[in-house]
Image 1 (spheres, rainbow, N blue to C red):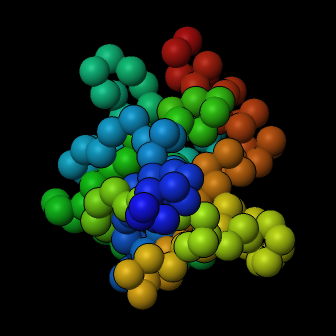
Image 2: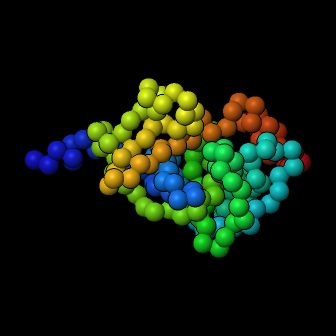
Image 3: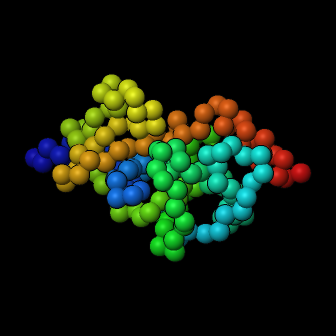
Length: 159
């Protein structure tokens, strides 16, 4: 029997930021869309770039580049947005490109909490097809203060 079939634990959506590969667990990803215009959201935490309207739903846009300490850059027409669920709300993340969905076997995954305790927003690292992929922990994306600030800004916007 094929051992890899029995060791697959998850699927991940792989994306790039400045040529580095990152991923989110597939169940957290609602959809991937082309980049759209962002509206400013006054009083939002610094990590929130603004909001977008997707089929009548207001979704905050989080600046994943800022969270990872990457250089800011202008949004390009070929950029994508990943609409994902943090467990508390849906957020949109600007990424350079989405490269696809990969199967993640247990033997390909290193838990960052055990091996890389300094990597606060990374759930783990996977080695797939000789590429290192940082798997992002979306539940840790916003701090409690940022979450409260975002909630306040969204409520203020609706008044």
